[in-house]
Amino acid sequence: MEKDTNIVPEEQEQTINTIEITEESKKKTLSFAKKTRIIGCILIGFLVIGCITYLWRPLNPEDESLDSSYRNIIYSSSNDDNTYLSCPDDNHPHMIDLGLPSGTKWACCNVGARIPEATGGYYAWGETKEKKKYSLNTYSFFDDTRRTIYDIGSSICGTQYDVAYMEWGDPWEMPSLEQIEELIDNCYTERTEINDFKGYQFIGSNGGSIFLPAAGGYKGSDCENRGLYGYFWSGTLVPDQENYASHLNFYIYEDKANFRVSGREYGFPVRPVATNEKIAEVKSSDFKALNGKKEKTLISCSDDNHPHKIDLGLPSGTKWACCNVDANAPEEYGAFYAWGETEVKDVYEWSNYSHCDGSLETCYDLGSNISGTQYDVAHVKWGDSWQMPSLEQIKELIDNSFCKWTDLNGIKGRKFISKNGGSIFFPIEGDFDHSLYDRNYDCWSGELCRFTDAYILWYNIANNATYGEIFRKHGLTVRPVAP
Image (tube, rainbow, N blue to C red; front, side, top):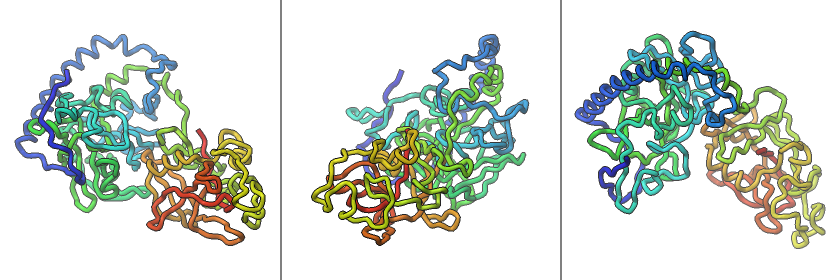
């Protein structure tokens, strides 16, 4: 039964605040966690004995209740314990053995991530879905009328409020504060960077290691401190600060991680754990029936047979092409097209624009969105489900990834990196106006802004990715998308 806890003051704008946990609170929390673990072990013992026949049955591969992002993934080895010192392959997540006293295994990557260095999803404490804004007013367990936060338990590990358990299933769950303290006390850390992601490498006494990215966290609509701080929720509340939950905390310019507390409404990543008890329970089930149930998607190019559909973990499920129309590799520009045209030309002017009578005032009506039509060069040239992106798809790309200047095989450009670790590269392109080349713009959308202009993906004066508009006569590149 949910009940009210402490009164919360009116929400105020502030950056992410972490509070150092007091020794008294720490002792209370860890004491409670140890008692809970003992009781839990006893209950699990009875559960294993009572349910062994049930657990031994083959699972039905057609069971739609298992259709969660990682429930189809089995441990990628025939090792007896299915645990590793580091990832043996790209079939994440893996259980990493860090030689911890409790035997707890840590996942190699975050919930929502496809590779260890990716940030994964950001979740408010107790919530299991991402959202655009993280504040008290959008927190599922906040009563705005009474200014109270509901009590959903002092520990949510393994419950309906645990995003690790809900997304990945058994044996995964959010770590307790006790398990975070064990990680900190029994591993040494190295500040490092993997594929553009800065973070901490936690290395156990047995040589096992996991990488935690400095993913920052969401306060309001902004992701703060990405690349500087790592915040990772535990499933544990602080007894004398019920509106706050504890989390792993590190700053990349310090040598040691610690744990602190923050408001439950913040959006932080989650790194799951698995206990020996849960692992033993799950081993009794037949996982092979679930293997390969979901379609495997790519987060980067798997070979040189371009184009590839790149999964950026976008809410709509849209996949972006790895390269432009007429490009043979991601770093190639490809060809330039006027909006609605499907052939390349030397001069881009109203006088030779196919869809007008020689001037902007005489533009033909091709429809407000040409994606997937005869005027869509992506659809015409590539076929299948490929088409020009809509404005909403461009906005979704911008809102759900971060963009950085980089180079690929000697070509400068911008790389969009998503929370699941997927990435696409846009070479520095531009547009043709008349016969002159200008590198200020990027690629077309399929949507009109007004009768003479269409929306584009471009970069503002601060080099931030955004969207704008330009005359239809200009020659720009096209980066296709697919459902």
